[in-house]
Amino acid sequence: LTPHAPQVPEPAVKGLDRIPKFSTGSIPVFALIGRNDYVMGAPLAKASSDVLTSYDPDVVHLVSPDILGFSAQRWARDNGVCAVCTYHTQIDRYVRFYTAKHSLLDKLRPRIAVQKLFSTFYGGCDVVAVPNSAIADKLVLKMGIPRAKIGLFPRGVNATQYNPGKRSKALRAKFGADDSNVVVLWAARLVPEKGADLFADAFVALFNNKTLLEHYPGVIDRIRIVVVGSGPSRAQMEAALPPDRTVFFGHLVGDELRAAYASSDVYFFPSHTEAFPNTLLEAQASGLAVLAPAYSVNRALVPAGSGHLVDEHAGAEEFADGLFTLLRDPRYRRAIGKEAVRVARNRTWAKAFDGLTTCYDRCKALRR
Image (spheres, helix red, strand yellow):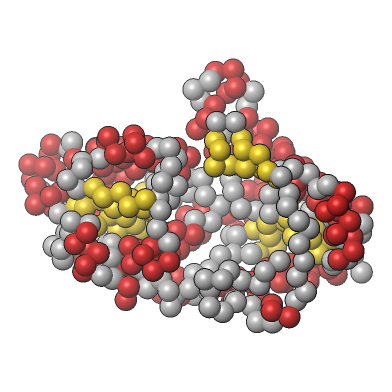
């Protein structure tokens, strides 16, 4: 366990450098069929289990309900060690993007099957650390997890790294934009479950709206689209989006990523599947006007006045309307971007890890 990544100058929680660290060695992983970017860990082998036993932890932190996660949970139970499990990914919302086209698979109701799997895994944890109240309600109401087991581990953003001051005219020039343009950014893995199709379809709907083109040609002409990230949907998106208005930057990290946020004006977040969208928080901290669907998680993260939320089940036309609203009204766009900065500054990593250490303390007390 390393206290913090090498590119982070200081850990969010003081004293981590004094914690003994160890490694169980390598654990084999295997990719899911058809998606080699999703991998699962093999179960704990005896050698790894023996190392854990010698380390004698008070708490085991489990992050994934896969084969490795279940085997580590079993080890904790057999050795009287409490387990804190963090909820990260709404896989039950992912599966419909891959089964809807296959009638036989769809009839098996895979979303319900995943929820039952999650219910078993998280039900076997002593404390379940969730990123927000929306996910807590989901686990309680849909998966039967007792509310008494729920703890809070939100996410944070480093406002000294992500802020409007990172804005760069030189980078905007690479976007094909000057101060008169409105740059719409999306940073994500370019895959169906993240909303890649919806993102492209919304712009197609906007550019094909003859009424808007006739009455507001100058507004539509000002738009520039920036896509950061890579994935199997990229080729389809490149075919759908106008090449003279769109820049695909691929994967960016560090200062380049932070400058890309701050040098944009609108963050278009089409996903309905996130448990806690870190990119949305980074966009808020960078002063962008967020456009997103008003599903439960986004409602928890985007208070009134700090973003532009459309209906939870909005399609391309509704998102196109939202884009036009933000394009046409710069005063509104800047106001919600300014409020987004204020909201993000209250979401620090120190507060986030206070929540996680509280979950550890609760868990440890259960085994005394």
